[in-house]
Structure formats: structure tokens, C-alpha cells
Image 1 (cartoon, rainbow, N blue to C red):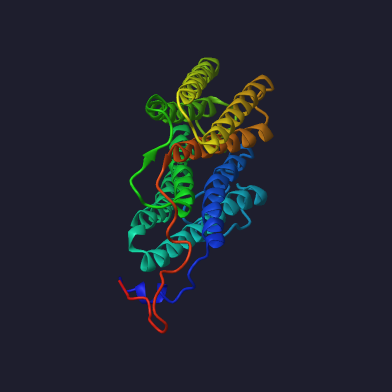
Image 2 (cartoon, rainbow, N blue to C red):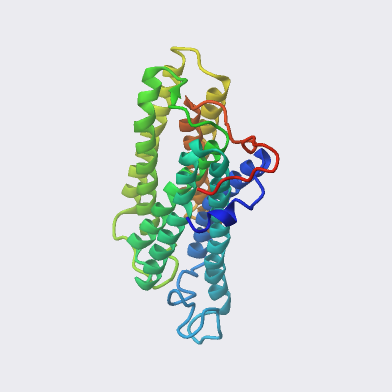
Length: 325
């Protein structure tokens, strides 16, 4: 590619820099969902009434008879955070690209890194459609659900910076390995069901937006039932781990999943009992991101791809330059 000569001039990212970029990707991908929930609970979803402009004829908030200045800035601020998200994603791509120039076997790392900016562009388009659709509840649900795989992929990227590229070798018993797939499927079903509860709830992002016309009690029961199913599979996974020697790291990750899942379930119950207060909504969205992160970390920890080979530049003779590829 024509950018390769410029990328090869970049300093080779150290192990510390690689980890920092991976962590930044996870934090930003998870954080944008939380700030989006703040937009929703403050009724600022249509603070900027159009997209990509904030108001017709202006990219930034302006005095407007219909839209309050504070709601405009809350929505506009969330849009600006997309650029922070994109910067973190571009840093991941550049780091992975610089690594593969010295270690050509690390192409999986590059592919994972490229999913982030691509996903952000898709998410921005979906966000624009959501605004143009006046925050119809199902568009908001899609907007949230599109962001969840990006959190998962960011965790896989962080792991990829810290492992090799050998064929994955399972480090858990066969039954536990098989249970990971239904565990992940149930996790996303819980998230999808949660969007229907939000769609029928009081926080639509704007007082005039349409809500999902379904009994919220029934939707909450379905959401809670799927969480119970997730926890049952998680418990079965733990029993399966006892059938063979398992690295201590896997048990630590397994315990982390239990901690965040139970905390999320408790928070959801309290939130429902108290009438869905705004602060708890944002915390519940944060909890959703933590469940994804913990489950993805357990998924990654269940197999081994060998030691990382890209912690340092490839050895070369003095004066030799990295060949362009």
C-alpha cells in the first residue's frame, strides 16, 4: 500500500505501548455506550435535530427556540467522542501495521485492528439514521446492539497484542469449550432483550419519541429469564472446568464473569424496583459493557496461541531498513 513507507518510519511499538493501545480500544468502545445512555436519560437525543450537522446550517450547537442549549451540547459532545473513539482505533491500526512490517505472521492482528475503524464508521451511519428517524425505539436498539460486537473485538485485539498466532490450543476440557458458544449466544440475547425493556421504558432520548407498546413487566421478565439461562450455562461451564486441569488464569476470568453478571442482575432489579432512575440506567449500560468484556476475556483465556513474537522489532543487520511490503 502507498502508506507503507510512512508507517515503517514510525517507532516500533513496545509491549507497553501495545497493551496501552489495546486497553484504550476497549475503554473507548465501552465508554461510548455509557455516554450514549447519558444522552438518552437526559432527553438530549434530538438536541441536535439533524445529522451530520447539529442544526440545519450549523455543525455545532446554536441558539434555537425549540432546542435547549444544554441538550444540544450533551448530544454534540457525544458525537465529538466518536472522534476520540476513531483516534484510538486508528492508533490500533497503525500499531498493528507497524508490527506486521517486522513480523509478517501477525496478519491476524492487523485484521482485528481494521475491524474497529470500519465498525465505527458503520456505527456513525446507524447513529445518523437514528437521529433522522427521530429516535424510534428500534433504531436506538440497533444503534446500541451494533456497538456491542466492537467491544468484543476490542477485547480480542487486546489479547492478540499479548499472544502469538499459532493455531488455537484449548486449555479447558472439551465440554467447557462447547459451552462457550451457547454462553456467548445467551449473552447477546440478554442484551437484545434489554433493548426492548429500554424501548418500552420512560427514557426515550426525547419526550416526543415513540415508545415500544408492550407490557414492560413482561419484557423485564423475558430479559431476566434470559439472564438466568446465561447464569445456568455459566455455572455448568464451571462444573465442566472441574473435569480437568485448568490454568489459574481461566478460573480468575471465570470468577470475573460471575462478579459482573451478578452485579448487573442486582443493579437491574434495583433499577426496575425504583422506577428506572437516570443514574442507574447509565450504570446498567456500563454493566452491560463489563459483561461483554468479561465474557470475551473468558473466551480468549480458554485457548492458547503461544507466546507473542512481536514484542520487539525483528532482528536485522546494522544499517538495514525494514523492507516495504
